[in-house]
Length: 79
Image (cartoon, rainbow, N blue to C red; front, side, top):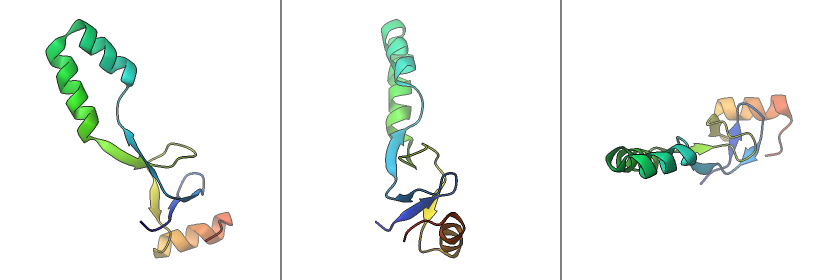
């Protein structure tokens, strides 16, 4: 995987995968309602997104793209 840069904070590196939604909500739905808990769990498992490990924003772009190179120069990121 190529290095990526965050458009929010300028972090360069590999993004991490993070599930959308809330673990607390998932637990509550499982405790109170079996079917909605299952549906919510399936949604969370299938809706993972790549996010910046530093600021948690899903706004990472490839560092070798024209916009990524321009952003790295502006933010002084090391390539």
